[in-house]
Length: 110
Length: 114
Image 1: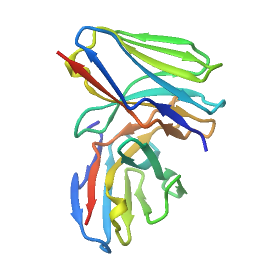
Image 2: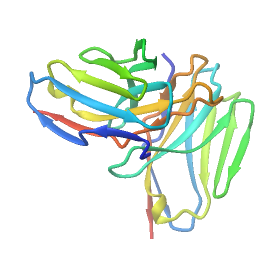
Image 3: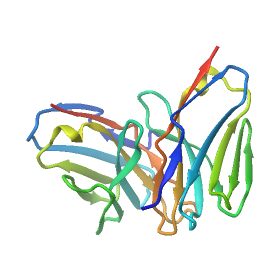
Image 4: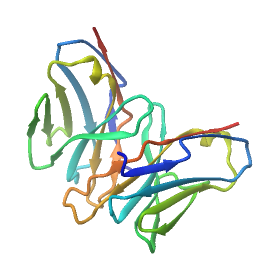
């Protein structure tokens, strides 16, 4: 089956930028998503990018997509302690099903 | 998302017991999904349904069954629970009329099987 990989952990200082990376194997991906999960909560959609785009910016969030390398990243500018959470990338295949990465735990130190 | 609710939120049960997890949505979406989350493994799809008459197995359906009682309700059953089914379970919905078919998640049910 298709695979989505993320690093497990990222630690940054408050005010710095965070970059969370994701790689995937499905060459037929249509959309790619970033979800945020806070402790004890479900997954909240943060942002998405269509597969024919290479960048999308939404306030403090910047998504970069390198389709050739099948690499997706999420940059959070001016990271705050409230950004501490687990971040999941997911790719949607041609059959409209999502495959999730294992999640990256972001820890923001004051 | 408050439009997708799950009950119960937490459940502890014993091996061999039958358990049902409920999901309801007020979003009017036609598609519903059940996932389980295990640490470091992300979310894995158990079952999905694209409308009331449609039920499909996901990646890890063994040991589970589902029922789509109405467009707004999708329940997940563990006929005879076993300890390795201890996990966080999420229900999600999406609307195929929306081009992105974005999935919206409920708050999750934490299930512990002793």
